[in-house]
Amino acid sequence: MNERPAGGMVPINSSVAHPARVYNAWLGGKDNYPADQEAAELAAAANPEIIPAVRANRAFLGRAVRELAGVGIRQFLDIGTGIPAADNTHEVAQRVDPGARVVYVDNDPVVLAHARALLVSTPDGATDYLNADLREVDHILTAARDTLDLSQPVGLMLVAILQYIPDADDPYAIARRLLDALAPGSHLVLSHPASDIGADEVAESMRVYNERAAAHAAATPRSHADVTRFFDGTELLAPGVVHLPQWRPGPDDVPPAGALPMWCGVGRKGQA
Image 1 (tube, one colour):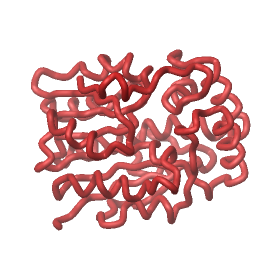
Image 2: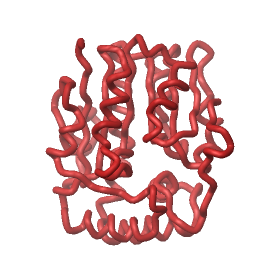
Image 3: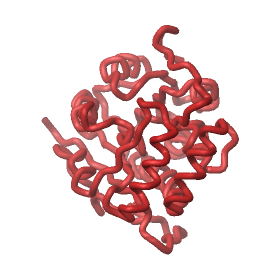
């Protein structure tokens, strides 16, 4: 398990909300603190579509991983992993190919404490966990090479994570640097809260969340055009950047009654 030096670890602060723990609370998990529960409850009260959205986001991740594994992607770099839940990336991928290899990345010590649940690989495959911030691109790529062969295609998972990178830190450059380091045939799997679906409710839920979150974990929703921009330089897979339930639903998937406030898509990196 790859970890940053102790001086680079983010200490647990239970008095402020953290994304992974708030997400865990929305999913009905127990690995969170009162500050996370308060932020989750108030944000959901401001925008009741949050809870079905995070569940749909989890389902989108599973469908995307199955799709990529089905077309021969055998390596995944999952950044913003969150606290382990059902159908983590390696579990979905290794059901398709037991030899699949996955590196998880997150910067929450609570995720680190549960990381061994993410390391239960098939004998033929491999999983690793890296404690790092998404902004630490060089560190992530260097450590990922211990498990992944970056000269071969990789599924880059940026699922519900880029909203925590403010415009001042240029989230587009971060995503581009990661994708640029990967081989042609790699895929970008991305979801992001929407600023143009239920705009008033989303703005209010973000406001109450951000008031209770650590400064480095404040969230910024973005529009359909802004989210689509993350896929510049890739070939967007059909059906493009769409609402979560619209991305290649299965025959048993039941669409929600309303529009969920998140966009998602998958793009393929072509030849240089």
